[in-house]
Amino acid sequence: MAEIKKITLANGKTRYRFVVDIGRDENGRRKQLTVTKDTKKAAEAELARITNERNTGTLVAPTDLTVSQWVRQWLDRKARDIEATSLRAYEGALVHVHERIGHIRLQALTEDDVEDLAQWLVTGARRRGGKPGTGLRVSTAEGVLSKLRECLGRAVVRRLIAVNPAEYVKIPLQAKKQDRKDHRRERPWTPAEVRSFIRVIEDERLHAPYLLSLMGLRPAEVVGLRWSDVDLTVGTLETANTRTMLGNRWVLEKDTKTEAGERMLPLPSKAAEALRKFRARQAAERLAAGEGYTETPYVVVSELGLPLNIRQLRERAYSLMHRHKLRRVRLYDARHSCLTYLANNGVPDHILAAWAGHTSASFTKRRYVHPDVEDLRPAATAWDVFHSDDRPTVSEKV
Image (cartoon, rainbow, N blue to C red):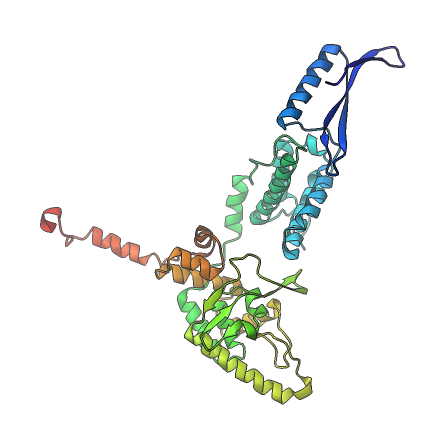
């Protein structure tokens, strides 16, 4: 038990002080806390509280860490467990935390501070490339709060703070409503629009890569595909490699983000045939270019063998859409179109998730399946049947 000592200050006033062990640091060194109180009774009460919380594992030792300092420490640890692209997204999101509340001492941060941050994010934070005071999109602001919530949750686990002040903070409802009015979500292609795109790309050099996008592969999976991942004899492809981009400038090659993302997919017959033609075309291009051809293992390459990145694939697709007067959508949204079509045509949830490369079927359906008005038409037909005069009564059924 720590001893409470009476001390006399230089001005003659008396105080009561004790030094108590509060555990060990990450290197195993003993940590101690010095506490001074005006009265012996107050010192006894504080010592009892600290001892009890230390023994029950709930003690939060005082620290001068600011929010920014803790965020940086947390990101350093986070970097060990996430991809470089994900780390970049975390750092970009938390820039706003540094700017608005980074100076606040971590243990002094309150829910009111975080609510002020949430309001500022949608009204005053600067968008990338935008003017100051315009505010972030709600989806971006929610991402900032989500990452801050995770960061502060870890501070609770490490006993730096007692509670997470961001736990129940949300973006204001009015901001969400206004955002929906100002930014209508772009609809993925309908099946009819997908068929129109398929017709116009039949004679295009990148016919096969576009078909892979239309069958639900991510753009990074399409451009990361190697010929060694494709088996045209049995009709399969494996998504074991991706080529994504950092800041839309640098290509980052890596394996799939999750174990579920690394999957073997059966090739639809049209996609398999398009890949055979593409491989034959590349052989002819290699012969024509001679020494000017660059050998790489990738499927999606230029006429000289150079691998294309997701930005190049996207821009060429946009050019096709513009030339043929098709509604412009992201190639990634072709993935949404594919998964919506499969879901509407009876593909079981677990198969749908496996095809998408997800671990959760509910996530696949929540984020990637978007029934449109024509998809809902059978419900209207069923309603007509329900209210039809020709519908058999209970007695007629018997």
